[in-house]
Image (cartoon, rainbow, N blue to C red; front, side):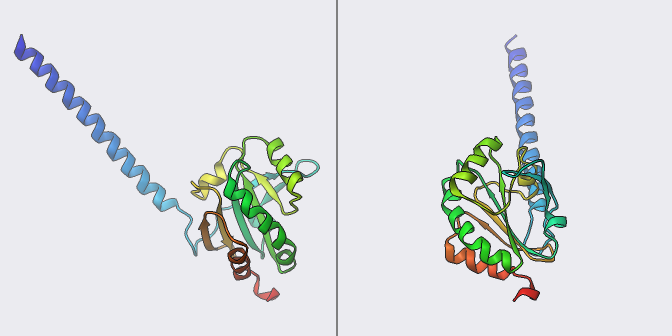
Length: 185
């Protein structure tokens, strides 16, 4: 009977070990797959269409169609993100200057509700377009894990630069200058 218990324990341990090995293999394969999907500098920015907030009616913005030929600063943020809140005034202060130069600032909010976003926009008098990624699909497509994360996209739709973390006014100004269309320089 003791031999039978030892065999059962050995089988149980073997099954547990196989399950753990399977989990490790799954995690490795998943991470390798994710690394392949990362939006890299020089690659085409993934297309998307999202609902714009704080506008009358149902209006959507399409990255490739609505901003064709423009430089685009694509900023992922949320109202609960303190570094995001710190860089928003810089974005607003530079927006009129760069809009005239053919560069658009597009902020993608990952907040849960539009009410929170709209209150933040009104309170801070933001005028650049803000869209709502309620389901996180665009955040996933761009492989964003940290907020804020910003992609600077050239007029041809390729990613010029990706920045994780908050931007200073000087850095933001310089990065926006990099994506000004040639016709506007």
